[in-house]
Structure formats: C-alpha cells, structure tokens
Image (cartoon, rainbow, N blue to C red):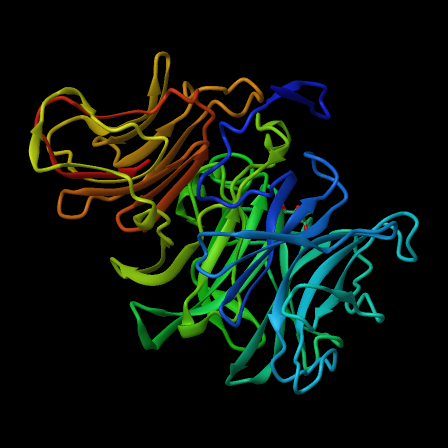
Length: 505
Ligand code: FRU
C-alpha cells in the first residue's frame, strides 16, 4: 500500500476503497467546486476547481470531464491552467450561439468561460479578484484566454464566482452575470451585450443565512408544478461556514427577477436573520454536511435544470482520508419547483445511476415492523435503496446503513419531532477532524402517514432524497470495506413497512 503525506503531516493510506463507483472523481489530485457546467451537441461538460499537482487545495486550475449521460465521465486534459499571475477560481461557461463576444465566428460560435482571476502578488492587480474570459472554438477541448482580461474589476479582494446566463424577458435580451462580494454577503448582478463590457444592475443581500462568506451563486427560472404560466426565479447562494449542518452549505431563495433585480418573499429581514433559531426556516439545497458550491448546467435542452455540488465541506475537506485523489462531485440532480401547502419549494431528484449497472436486487413487501432490527439480505456499499415506511405509533423508524462489527451509519425518523436524522458518529473513520463525527437533521413531514426515502450509497457517501426529493441530505462516511450490512428498524410497536427495494452491487 502506498502512502501520502498531507499538509498537516498525517500519513494516509493511499487506498482506493473509498473511490466512488458512480460519482465523478479526478483520477488523481484535488478537486473542489463544479465550474463551467454546460451542455453542447450531446455532451455535458463538467469543469472543476482542480490542483493538477497535488491532493491538497492549491494551483487552482479548471479540470475537465465530459459525459453524454451525466453518469459516465471521461476525464479530459486540464482546460484552463493557473500561471504565475493568476489562479483560475470558480465560474461558468456559456455557448455564445450568436457570437456576441466576437471571440468566434458566425459559422463557429465559441464556448465562453467566465471565471475569477485570483491575482497573485506578482500580477498587475495584486491580491484582487476580478472576472475574466477564456474561449474555445473546438467544443471545449482547448481554451484561449481573452487578451482584454479582466473584463470586470471592482477593486475587490473577494469578488468571485460569476454565473452567466442569457436573459430574454420583459426588460430585453442580454447576458446577466450573478457573482458575489463574498465578505459582504452580497450577490451582485451585471448585464452585458457581448460578455466583455458589463454594467451593474443591482445587488441582493445580505439575507437569510449570513454566518459565512457567500460563494458560487446561480439564478434561473422554473415553472411551478410544470405550469409555464406560473414561473418563479430561484437564486442559489452557497455559504461557508454558517451552513445549516455546520460548515459549508447551499441556500436558495424563490422569487422574481425582472431583468434588473431579484426580489424574494422568502427572505428574513436583517436583525432577525442573526437569530440562529431562524436557520431552519430558510431554503436549503441540502441538510447534510457535504453538498457545497452547487450550481446548474447551462444550455440543457427542454428546459431541464440540472445541478451538481461538490460532495465535501471546507471544515475538513483537506483531511478526508482518501488516497491520491481527493473529493467527489455529488450525483447530478434534476431540480424543479412545486407548491407544498401554499409554499413554492425546490424538488431535487438524482439522475439515477444504477438501473443499467444492476446486479443485485432485493425486495421486501408490505409487513408489520415489530420493535427491533430486521436484517436485509443485501450487501450494500454501492446501492440505491428505496424504502417506504409508516411509522404509526412507533417512536422511531429507520435504516442502519454500512453496518459492520463496530460501525454503522443510522438514518432515523423521529415521530415525536418529525425530524429525519443521519448519525455518522460511528460510521467508520471519523477522527481525522473534530467536526466530522456528527448528526444531521431535517424536518420531513409525513405524507398520508408515510415516509418515502431514496438513498444512494457509493463507498464513501450517503445521499438521501426524502418525499421524492422535497428534502435532501448528503454526508460522507468512511467505513471499512466489509461494512456493507443493511437493516430496517422500529422503536416500539405499530410501524409498517410498505416496501423496501435495494439495487446494488
Ligand atoms: C468555493 C470557493 C470559491 C472559489 C473557489 C476556489 O468553494 O471558495 O468561492 O472560487 O472555491 O477554489
């Protein structure tokens, strides 16, 4: 077994036992935020924050992977490398179909990446963060930096993470950029006709969770319950630390964008927002610890909105006990809006990676669940688990995941407070960081007395989609390879299993 020394000096076993089967990881080295998510001619492009030279954060460049189905990814050469003047921080990519930028031709319009130049002390704008362009005329294979960079500079050290989209609405047709003044907890909006000259439109925030810097925003429009006459805009704001479960997390606001400013009825006004007891009232993309920097693809056909997050947390990302690679992306999620009890909410459903990989299938039909633990005859470390439960009079029901001799990850629904909790305190390797042993919690109202869960396990992760994706919870776990046990449990009498379905390998 090889070994690897971290910045902190700890020696890690360089084993691939945690390498996910169906989540994207770079073959080698460090990865964080998804960047430049764009679809073009049948190919999904995933660029990402990447250190080409090591398994720790640094030398930030855009790595690149491509996929035709969002499930199988082919790693490509580094797309935009850092140099002595700038690190290539997060940003987005657009297909400039009408060559508004003039960086391509009418016959061969460019893909344009809008990224943050994080300037070094040796650069002409030392220590600043400003927005820059790079373009590709060969569908993302090779990239050229625009000679007029940066295209947008606010003389700020914390102005980053531009997400650009084409706005076509009541106020006209133009490019819109949302980016952050991270330390101010503000999203700044700009417009442009050509991606090069930008004009300030408005500023949003601070609002709702403000306990950390704001990063990686996104803004998009979706119909409510599929009704094109009833659209809303969704503003995504990632925050670190100060997330709902501790450390990094993503919040969302539902509202209106009139081409100039974003307004939301789901903001809690200043003053009250400092009250941490309000935190559970805000919109969270995920209630776990390991879904951060989530943003959406541009140019996807049929109005589909697909997001990917970085499956890690800045609290301990540098310490996670993997080998020469570090960090995975979440499963891609298709997001939509739905009205629940009068409130418009996001629903998120994973692009399902398992049907075609199916080798094992276990199904338990309807039955009363006696108080106690029922072992499921399935070895589950790479699996999709669908379960529907009626807690009834039981105090709690749930699943024991990744169970081994002295390891378990427990997903438990508590009838008394209506919360679903994931407890990873005994999940396996937890001691690499003091904040890692944790219990995450999210409110999950029963529907017709029932709790429906879809859970994906993939060697070092647990992704929970509750009530068809109305609430999600993503956590990393590092169990032993042999810890593949799965069980259902009830605490007290009166619970029923409606169905359990496990597909895995
Ligand atoms: C978010 C982030 C971004 C920044 C990038 C640097 O995780 O801090 O704000 O652009 O990572 O790698």
